[in-house]
Image 1 (cartoon, rainbow, N blue to C red):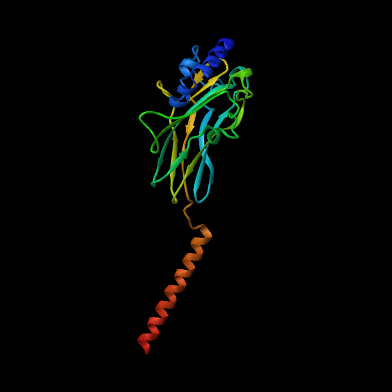
Image 2: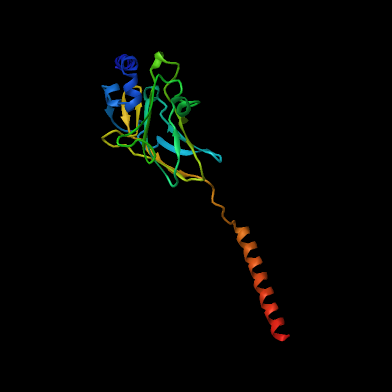
Length: 233
């Protein structure tokens, strides 16, 4: 079955590259024997997670990480698709959608088929971005993902002002889900964890609160004593 899957994927790589890049991956066509099942470990531990990848004055990076504990090579991940609902609380935010940026340095960087596309009707922020990739065994230099915490993709947002960006990973469903596919075409929905990212808001620590209270107390005492002196005079 794995040989059949590879032949189909190889054909798609050469016959439909423009379609794949424009519309995103169609795992149901690419894996004709795709069986929708459950996490092979028997518990919901495999995860697609958005984490902070770094913040500067002009950029916010968000890493999409794939975490799996599948120890059996038959359960290694050969296909990954993640839908990310993106929103921002400011204007002028743009996303670098180039394949080199999104997959550069990632565990899927050498996979044979990769795609970055907005899910219709989305065309930009706010909207849902679909990031997907498929490993082609001996047809590419990549390798399926075994157990570990893997960097799957990096979303680089260009900012013109301080901004909070939310990346909520949409859960598995029966339509076009966030889905993991093993080397034996077992597809299942991982646990999803999104978050919001942006400038840190200064907060007072416990010692800061104590110091603030002391300064406030000293100020009140000084004000009261000054009033008494003024009245006595």
